Length: 154
Image (cartoon, rainbow, N blue to C red; front, side):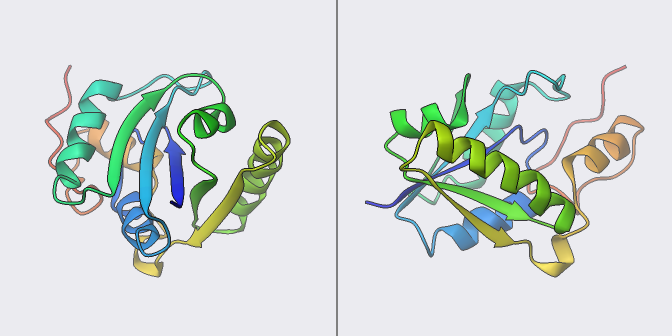
């Protein structure tokens, strides 16, 4: 069985992420959307809330599951018998960043292959960072996320 891990902070999960997962289901038997804890980032939305929202998006797709994890992505992939990491690339800057991470993951887990999918052009400008900023200041983000985000608190 070809199991892929799609790791990220997903804060929030975007339509670009959704596109990568949907396209990934043509390549893999099972995809685990893995919400990692990035020690260099403070979350905007709680992990538990995001897991529930992503699970709802994929409620009719049994080949996609959602989990939170701590620690190294390569170790979590090994624990889940995932031999592939699925990653989306929007641009060359993403490639430089992701290539470095892929090499490190391969060092930690030599059986792990990283598979890159190029983001669909209409979604390439979407980033979680931009969506957070728009949302934080009361802007409408409905075109960028596959669920409704509650109005920001504060």
